[in-house]
Amino acid sequence: MQEKKIIASLIATVTLTSLIPFTVAAASKDFKEIEEAVNFDMVKVGDLDVRVYEDGRVKGLGKSKSEKVPKNDRKKILKIMGFSEKEIDTLPEEMQEELIADGGVKVDSEVEYEPTFYTDLDGVEHIVTEKNKEKIQKIARKDFERLQENELVNKEITGDVKIAGTDLGDYKEGDFKGWGYIVYHGIEDGEYEYSYYTKFEWSSRPILYFTDRVAHAWQSHTTSVKTTADYDVTHFSSSGRKLGSFDFDPDIEQDVYGSMAEIDIDYHEGIHEGYVKDKVRIPKSHKGQTGQFVSKYVHSSAPKYIDGFSIGYGPLSITIKGSNWVYSWRNTFKIGNDY
Image (cartoon, rainbow, N blue to C red; front, side, top):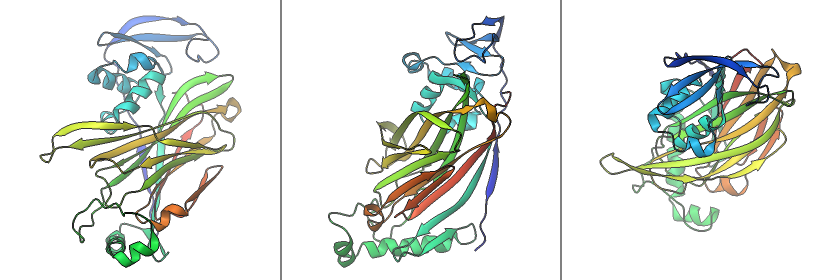
């Protein structure tokens, strides 16, 4: 089968419309300055005076302050940081708060989506393309129906199979989307500091739901200094009115070359979204070179692909065994670019 890759340029153009004509020299240790005095402007956003450095970085507000910023003002700050309105609309509120708490500037990057893989109940791996995706969905539907048969269920799992659909023939997965974002924070201890975000979203809860995983891995010269993750479920009334959301802290697994968060899908019906984030550092000696990180989201829709699950990391590589839906993509950018 022919593999199909899609490359999308994630470039946001931002116009600052509320700059106050106020420019002074900032101390070199104030918010990871570039080892010398850096000029900045003050931008009025609501009741806040937001500091914007000449390289485009926004000074972080800190966690306690970012949680109190009104939604409209939060969106304005994210636009200053380089996020488009369309991108902002896809970001969970917790991620938006974390972004303005940390500050920085969004890095332009290219995201390359690799083929999706589906492994059926017989262990056959299928590459999903635009041409054969309907055929693969038929295979997945047959697997779903097989899982309803008591004889097969009793042989393969202990306990109940959790099924979102009430009709035996009702097999319709929610749409999955994945993104990668890069934020530049400045220079710390002689190294460039970035945040790598791998974000995911299900438009609705999958039919069969167990524990999913979201992971990413980086280059050998890159070092993670902090890993965080978040998972949210937004639920709605039968008429489609938004009722509220649940916020969860996923379990995190860390490695030298990557990190992973476990996403327990066994919650309310609705939009499921979240992310895993690593704050990383890259030596300045790599200025001008290509920076990359790879992302994978693993969804299990059959019990046999839960117990035997394992994951391993290498430089820019993630090896996963015992899974049956795997979504992959990578982000590429220029290290130490003049943002």
